[in-house]
Amino acid sequence: MEIRQLEAFVAVAEELHFGRAAARLRLAQSPLSQTIRKLERELGVTLFDRSTRSVALTPAGAALLPHAHRVFEELELGRQATRAVSGAVYGTVTVGFSGALNHRTLPPLTRAVRRRYPQVTLNLVAGMLTRDGVLQIERGSLDLCFVALPLDASPAVRSRLIAREPLGVALPIDHPLAEDPEVDLADLADEDFITTPAASGSGLREAGVRACIGAGFRPRVVQEITDPFMILTLVAAGVGVALISDGVAQIMPSGSVFVPLRGAPTYLDHALAWSADNPSTVLRAVLAVADDVMPIPH
Image 1: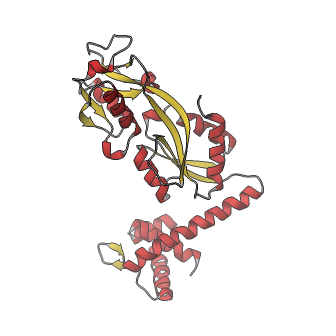
Image 2: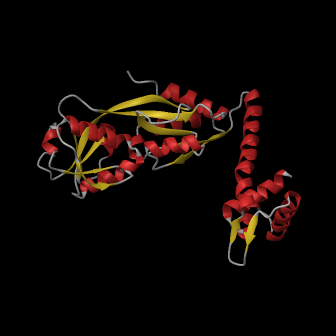
Image 3: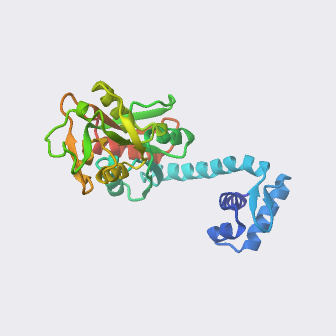
């Protein structure tokens, strides 16, 4: 079994189309088909069900695919190791983040990594809320993710606090409390709330519900939105109000205002999460940069 055969197999398995796979590999379709047939003969199995309209993995092909991925992961780790010996840091780190909630924390990290390690690529994945981010780390789809604490995760998932932001309330600009310097959360007990989905395990939602219960009520949620900035947009549209961390006060859309909450603050704790089982030397380098630019807050 040759590396070029595995490259051909992975391309067809991911594209499920010989033409697209050939274009991806910059090959003609006929040599690609010949390479796949040769691999099937060597293995003694059929890897793809082919028809004039579709291509699908057979059970044998599906069994081979994760092992093929691991071969290329090991090759990449080998390349990283050889560069590390000479002091160079090279490779890709896949980073998940939620969006607007990370507008203060993501840019300092990406800028610092780009300055210090110009050969490191950060593959940024937006719309990743805490529970989904943790699952992707456990599965190996993400190397690093911006999350909220506390985490419900396996022991292999490590995290570090990088910022603490008190919750406030986003109100439509014509709300009766919109011009107040502070708002009692209890005064919002009869309001319609917009928040992130419960199923996503969002730290923002959990912190908001905790604050409302502390104020003597459970919020009436009328709309669930994954994107935090779209939550603010719906507030501006008059759909409801939203509890949000004060980090977004500078990016409120027109038609909405951010008002701090009166009394003891409820904090949204921002963190970075990663797997201790991830052997990537590039991830370790990025974490070291994060330690420098985002020290643990007091």
